[in-house]
Each structure stands twice: as C-alpha cells, then as structure tokens.
Image (tube, rainbow, N blue to C red; front, side):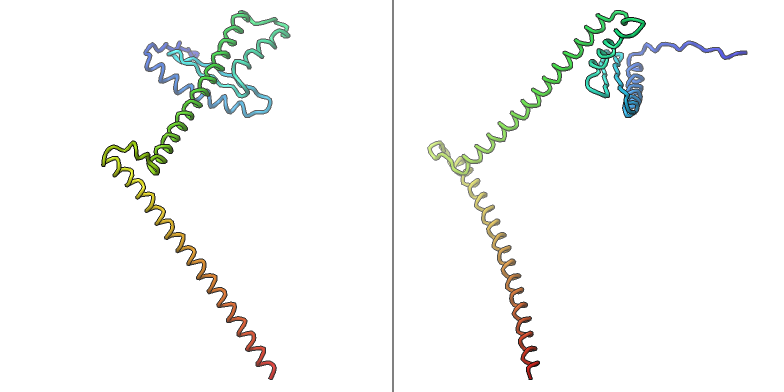
Length: 200
C-alpha cells in the first residue's frame, strides 16, 4: 500500500496566517542572504504578507532593477518574452518610483529632524547667553533678577573650581620639576666629591 499524500488545508484565521508568515519570512530572508554570499549570485525577493505588507530584498541594488534586467534578458531567450511582460514592467517601474520617493521622503524627514534639533540647541545657547549678560531693561521683577543672579553665580562657582584645580595641577607639576632638579644636583655633587677623592 503506497503513501497517500493528503492535501494541506488552507488556514483562514488571519492572526494565525500573519504569525506563520512572520516566522517563514525570517527564514526565507536568511536563506536569501546566505545565497547572496556566493560569487556571481544575485538574489531578488518579493513577498506580500496576508495583510498586504510588502517585503523586498536585493543582493545588489534595488529588487525592481534586478527583475527589470531579468525581463530585458528574456528578449534574447529562444522561448520568447514573458507573458504579460508589459504589465509586469509597468508594475516594477511603479514600485521602483515609489521606493525612490519613499527614500527621498525619509531623507527629508531625517534632515528636518536634524534641523529642528540644531534650532533647539541654538535657542538653548542663546538663552544661556542672555542669562549671563541679561538685558536689565527687560527685568521687571525681583524673581527674574534672582534667576539671572543665580545663573551668574553658578558660572562663577564653576570658574572658581576650575581655577583651583588648574592651580593644584600647576603646583604639582612645579614640585615634580623641582624634585627632579634637586636629584640631579645631588647626583652632580656626588660625582664631584668622587672626582676629588680620586685626585689624592
């Protein structure tokens, strides 16, 4: 009695389908990456999830360019061009255009975020400078005056601490230099004494 293969039942549960797809997607992408490590091997991959999410992978450039190049190569094939070639080319070109537009939008968003961050840093720096050298004509309350005074006092305390640290380092360096000079002088004095002893 031979082995009878039973047809696999289609899973209609959306959440289960998505979970199975997510697990399988990682496996397929890993295999595609492994294949792309071989010499003279180009790998292009298009996958659509049960919810319609597109996942692409290309070992060289864009996946759309790889498929378009494959379609163009089919013109020299003895079997002739692919079926629905024009429709497939249009779809791939549209995907390529949309992907390029998304890349440009992402770059613009990243530049805008960087610009906003630089503006914020600039505003913070200007605010700090105004605190160090406030416009007294715009101070209208004792609380505002106290705030600016506290900012200046903090800056002065930081300078005093820095000055004390620098003086300590300079004194330590000076002591080491003096100790080295004293040792050198003692060595020279010892050598002179030895020289005088040898003359008798």
